[in-house]
Image (cartoon, rainbow, N blue to C red):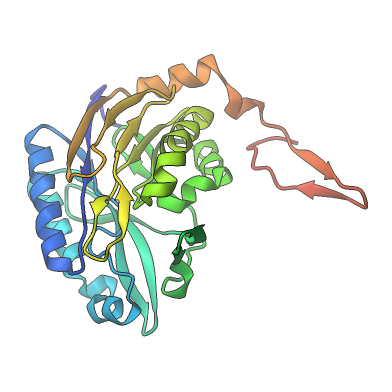
Length: 293
């Protein structure tokens, strides 16, 4: 655990396009700017390397983790700048016909400290011809990931995961003080739900939430919501990005606020197992409560 009582966190808001190289240039430039402003923890958004819905074009540009140039460059950048870099996610080739949506935590040495594959696939119909089938190209992850920062434990998630609060409860009960939600929210769902969902995950778990976002109208004509957010454990928004433009948001993070919030509202200690009774049967309901009987 770091002896420093606070640190500066930065979120990189991007507008990723169809090709990895320009996206890497955009991300690297903004990361350098954030580091120059004192950030020691920096996060990029979901699919930082490519925003592509056409399957043929997507797989033409996908590489495996070992061969991905964006990942290699971000590792070099973390090493050069001596930062903790959460690459929100990269689209990577897992098999000849399946991709993964994978998040990385890279340390100041350039080593990969943790990786997380998005568990919940964004398969929805919003009406008006707007629909998404993430599972058509991507295989879901199956493992929740908790890792270490110098200031506390970090639970890793991605975008649509935010609608599944049991995942965040499990991470908080395992010791997370910080939760990552790098995202590419649609404008429609973002306008309705983005702030509410992120503040709820922070409040109910007494955690900081870091949510770097994609923003604006992309080359593939998809429109994302922006509004990158840093939320404290009491639900206060500490920093917020614009609706449409790439950029940086920064906030000074006091990890002591986690203990303060959890002392005031100790809900992590108050969870209880329960049974769910329906008309025809009684079943045990899986409720993750550490140490409960």
